[in-house]
Image (tube, rainbow, N blue to C red; front, top):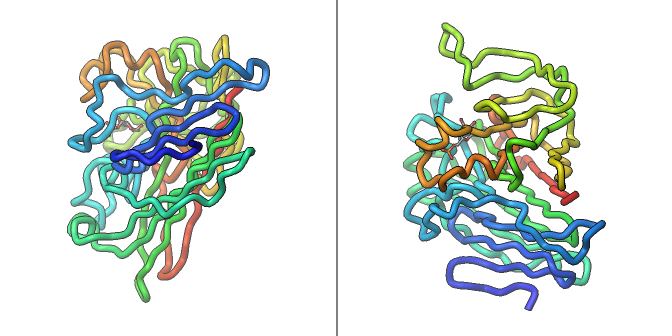
Length: 294
Ligand SMILES: O=P(O)(O)OC[C@H]1O[C@H](O)[C@H](O)[C@@H](O)[C@@H]1O
């Protein structure tokens, strides 16, 4: 059965072995089990989800691929001030709109979210979201289409795939980011804003220290690599990239984080994390990430 519908979500099982487990709550991808071309029979989970995270919808999930929309982090935009951290897309119940593709090569499904009286109380804008999840033999693609369904008014949003890549954080590097400008959310200037810096590690960024960096205009092709593996990430429509790992001191204080959880992931988050996208009435913006297991 390539697509199993469960009460709480879906299990996608590709004909060649990989699988994805996701919830209706937040359209949250919890796991992606994939092999790599050089070892096609060995499946590992490529996405970290904290074992202490309740999955019953009572609180946002710690791990997986949270969908951030319509604000990133603590809201700053005047239209966003009633929104929770990272917005509401990760805590709303999404609808399954059926399978788009289900064959030997890929399984592609489509979920949707529309504004409701509850979302309008937090952010008074009409919208439609399409979330398309595509599982191939060695890759997972997540695509978010954001549509402004107003007949007349634009809105400003942020959106991002807050992907918790399962990896040994102490030996993971992310590249190529060398020479790029980033804003360091762990180093705040006297004006209360993250300091602007330039990434200097030619061998790749590491997260040996607490890292919360928002890169501007990153390359569309990024690698994360560690001694026994890696992922290649291709993005579309995402002008910024966040790399986040709290390390122990901050990590121990994070809600729903399992013990030493920060040693098991690096978040690599393409999207709008600093800038806002203005979407005119009736228009759609598409953000996408394709993650290939290496
Ligand atoms: O605790 P959460 O709302 O899941 O956010 C976790 C982290 O997400 C992002 O990566 C932000 O850049 C961090 O500043 C934040 O701490």
